[in-house]
Each structure stands twice: as structure tokens, then as C-alpha cells.
Image (cartoon, rainbow, N blue to C red; front, top):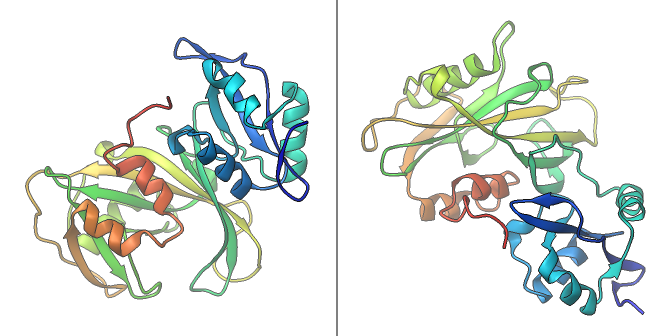
Length: 270
């Protein structure tokens, strides 16, 4: 009989059938709790980078050991139904990588939302994007960040779209206004998006506009001078990865930054 990891929680795994990277894979899910899913994955040595937002990808050669550790063998369709019923399923386009779901994020305008962090090398649906943010680095790999007066936090330059503005124009303008740096719109690389499931009404949110587009760009030179055109930021500076982690690792978007920017970001699941 399969073990459970909290009252009423089961860990499920389907047969290794989908093929990718020359291997067959299973999906490991919880029918109730991501916390329990992560706990189980750690207990059997599944790396964090194998997490896909609502499941872990498990290579065929590890299937038997994961079942022996307590995961319940489950047909693929039944596993999908259980994931949908749990409310944990993360909708995303094929090829996108779910990074995390952060629950109950509160914002400066008094609203709150659950936020999906999704890594993607394709731009999101522009009609749904209400803001853009940019991971901005120099040739040495240091990161430009600004201190938001409204949020009272350090973060990457970014902000809301203005009427008639494309998403790339939005990103370029915010970088210029908050850092003084001018970047080529064509140099912006889409790296993911944040999807907001609003828990409250009011504030600046508009129905149907639920995404923040995340770009990455590298500027030439070593720590070029930073300046600001507006007063919505009170400070700006270059930070190493360690400094960025110290200042920002408690913020809701941090898991996406780790997935995109950390030295291990390019590694594939094992």
C-alpha cells in the first residue's frame, strides 16, 4: 500500500511514456499539496530543477525506485484528473517551464494575488501583458537593480505599460527612466512571465490583463553609470549575484530570477 505524506495526501506517478532528450519520462504529482510533493522529492533525491510548476519530471530509470519509496503508480489520465481536481495544475504553453506558484502575494495598492512564475523563451500574449520588467546585466554578469519607492523593495527595472505602447517599448522606457541606460528593443530576450490570479478587486488591475513579461538584456562595458529620470525610484546600483540574493530572495519573483540568472540555470534535469 502506498504511503501518504500528510493526512489525505497521496503522491502519484504515471508510467514513463513521453519521450524527450532521448529518454522516457514520468510525471510525479501530489493530489493535494505542493509542500508534500517537494518534501517527497527531496527525500528521494530528485533535483529541484526537475520541478515544472505542478509536477516533477522523472526519468524512466528512476521510476521503480520512486514507486518503492511510496509514490502510487497511476494511469496518466487519472493522474491528470487528480491534478486538475487538486487545483494545483499550472496552465502553460508547450515548451514553457513552470517554476513556482506563490500564494497570497500582497501589493502596494492593497490587492493580493496568487502568482505563477513561468520560464519561457517566447513572448507572452501581448494583449494580456500589463507590465514588463528586465533582468539587466553588464559584461561581467553583475545586475542593475532599482529601489522602488512605492513597493519599498529592490528589484529589476520595470513597470506598467502606457496607452499605445508595445511591450518591448514599455520595457525600454522603464529601463531608461529608472537606470538612464538605453537598450535596443531587439536585444531584449524574453525569459518568462508572471501570471496573476487576483484574489481581490480594485487597485490598478484590469480584467484580462494578467501577465508581466520578463526580459533579459546585457549592456556593454563594466558597471556603466546609472541615473534616473523620475522619482518613483530612490536608489539604483549594480549588484553581484550574492548581493542580489541577499536583497531580493524574499520577494515573490525570486524563483524565476534563480531559474533564469543563477549559475545553475542552464542545467537540465537528471
